Image (cartoon, rainbow, N blue to C red):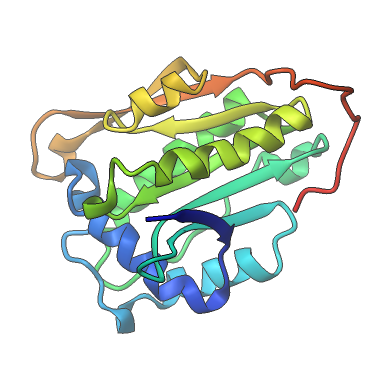
Length: 223
C-alpha cells in the first residue's frame, strides 16, 4: 500500500474531523474536553475555523496522508510556517475560540489558553515552524503516515533554517524525539478539576534547524 502526502482541501474537512475525534477518544484529557464525539451536524465551529485556515491563512499548511489503494485519508497535520518575525501585536494575543456542540467549553478553553501561553512565552514572534496538530486514525497507526507528515514540515524548517516547535502527547513523544526534538517544558493539566484524577502531561518540544546538503537560501516560497 502506498501513502502519499498532499494538501488538504475544504472538501476533506469532515473526514479530517472524523479522524481527529476518533483519535481523541483514546486520550484521557481529550475525553474530558470531548465527552462525546460530535456528529457531523455538531461540528460547525471546527468546519468554519478549518475552512478559513485552508483557504485564507497564509501561514497555515493543512496536509493529509492518503492511502492510495484505499483512496482514503488516514492522517493529517496542521503546520504553521512563520518565515518572518511577527510584531507583538500579532503573536501576543489569544483569539477567543468557538467550539463544536457537546464540547466541555471550560476544559477546552483551559487547555487552549495554556497552549497559547506556552507558545507565546517560548517562541514569541520569532520565525519558526509550529506543528499545531498531527493525528492518525487509530487503525492506521504504525504505518508511517504520521512520520511522513512530520518530516514534510521539518523539510521546510531545515530549508528555511527555522526552529520547529510542538506540544507532544506521551504517545507521540518518542516519534518527535527520534526526529530531533528535545523537551523544553511540560504542559500539565490537572484532571481533578473536571471530576477525574491525576495530571495529564504534554511535552513542549523544540528542534533546531538541521543544515541540508547544498547551498542554503535565505528564503523560499513555501508550498
